[in-house]
Length: 268
Ligand SMILES: [Zn+2]
Image (cartoon, rainbow, N blue to C red):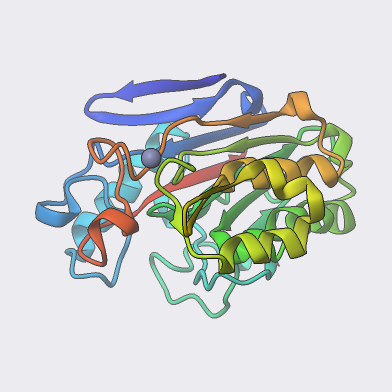
């Protein structure tokens, strides 16, 4: 795997070699290196959860610094486990951190420089996308509902339609998320995946007694390949957020008393 740990002072994050380019910068955050305390210790990126707003802002500032960007330009979304892709413009700078978000979306795309696009998770899958020739980027949040609604594929399609991206040129990196080791479900999840992916989903759905174990990262990888992204341009972080509570928050393991990690990408 080409995910690499990176350290800046106490801040620990990961980058994907596949996304390295002079045209963009990106980071997949961990819990480590922020200023929040208690349940939110320490690099919590979630506002409106009880954490102090000035601490959350400082956490954004630290993460934006390592990608050479300003948190004042950060663009967030109200994530709703849907399939809406928002084409972000300069008018959206600061939404979600400095001022309210006036849209719901689970994927953000742009061809504008200096707009760091953020997505968050605490088990869900996050995907970053880049077409270096078309000069566009994307950030996707995909839980199981978003995965079944093909949000990653819809982000690729929107990058093609809006900015002339070619899926064959797109680089994709799938960050840490809950693995099949810990994502135990009833039959509703595998049923949704079988409906969305057909037989191709089979190897990524494992039945164990009355329960199922579902490989969401693998399903998103499959979806990107079906969208035309070459297999060798898709990087997958092997880390499971529910196994690695030393590095990540996990909704499944912690419930609502927790922070969120995130992924960010910016066009230079
Ligand atoms: Zn696990």
